[in-house]
Image 1 (cartoon, rainbow, N blue to C red):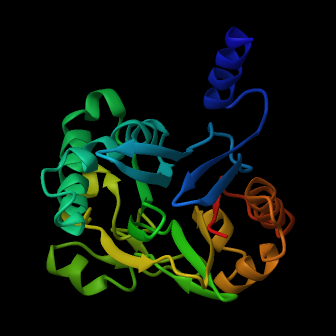
Image 2: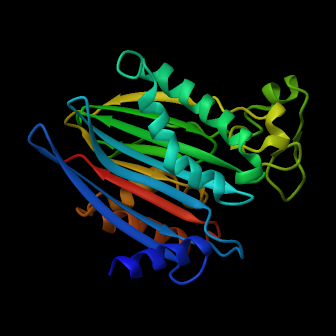
Image 3: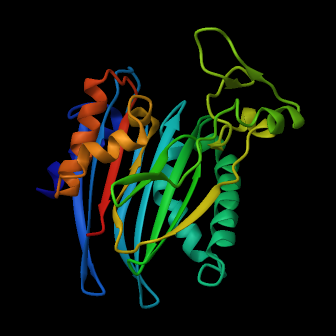
Length: 283
């Protein structure tokens, strides 16, 4: 069984066999069950799947941590795969993680990006966006992101975006201040130096002088009004608004089924990109 599972994962990573992946998990925190589910679907492009995710619970220093992330690669999947394996590890290694988590996340994002650039010969010239969410003891949620993968929380039925879409047009001044430019060709989205459709990303050495890897960081208290969290790559958000996504799954109890329904809805709405989605249910 283990051998077949390993072979299946290798085939999916290489772009063969099944075009989707799904899973779920749960943890008991302070007498409350917190459950998560995820679903990934490969897009219509000819290249292999470039989305990766993390969805797990981990005990660290008597704290129960929920670690959730979406990594959306471009120009290859190796950078996104590297982030899946190393970013949370690097965040948790930062000495001030427990005293100043925002500073720890910023430092880890920067050091991880530096390591990716050092490994260009191994990882290639591509890059990746990222949205990460750390849930501490089921009470405090800390979200960070670079790029256009997004985190949205539902509180009392209202969609609240916790991440920031780093679109080149929004950061034109910063890009031009560094000597770059933002193209605005009719029929196309704005791009950094006419190439990349996000203003912040890991990797992308050829654009790094004009491209930031500094994340936006936000925190949220998980109170009695917090129902669920959605993390998803832009393959979902290109065709669905935050409130539409929340309304679409508000009555779905199983988070794995909710994540699958969102990805299937995006495909039905003609999204051609890779689509990855995590849903975390708090109640």
